[in-house]
Length: 182
Image (cartoon, rainbow, N blue to C red; front, side):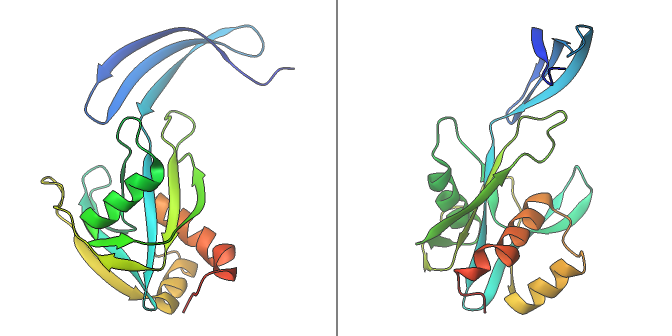
């Protein structure tokens, strides 16, 4: 049996600054019809910043989860923007540093059941101070945590932000073999 769905019709029911919501009528693998609610998202980037034996995180309140989260620097891709350029911009805005050596860790789709968002993950270990103005609607605080402490926190499940968990997983299992970890 085929394992894909064919979109028959798509109706946009909401279009905002960050997302668009559509309802698709689809033909299922068995030929029957169903509806899918899809959140269209332009994608994002995130950077695991490792500087002088510490990882740089941002703490910010996230209204959707109603929690103050510790996350790696991240942000939306502008239309047509190269992910590497977006990663550099986001680091400059959120932690004040320009990364000099971006390594692509990988990419993932956080919620493939209903959202098109894809996040490209990077890591950098060399920086120069080169801040940009923060986004006016973001209130963040930069937090530096020693790599060894981050590893312990990660192993103990203390990070709950998906992109941060994914980046740390890549870093501690794959990238650490070629990067200076501590």
